Image (cartoon, rainbow, N blue to C red; front, side, top):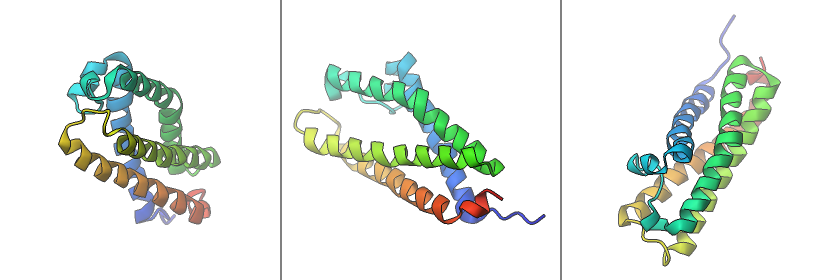
Length: 152
């Protein structure tokens, strides 16, 4: 049998695995050890975003851990196996992957006067979050266009 999985498919899977690792290190870790996630550079300190920012960060971390991360993992496994449920899970995860970086970028833009982020974050965040946005749009488009290929 010929492997019908394309470069785009493996790009979607590879970047999805990287995103999964970042979610575990940045979001799940912050639920149990927020300062550890700050030390890894995956969360902002209380001096940068204030107590309210930390509370919102932990709220997103909780939701990401119980909803987003399982959807992403199920999506990656499911589309690799050619399953319908994987396709739907991956669509859901990619929709979330498109949503959250836009929230973060806009929050940084409108809250720049009330946040004490280091100057390098104003440069690195738009780059990293922009990559996640492009990945999400590519993934949604790719899954839509290649459903039959993915589902064998």
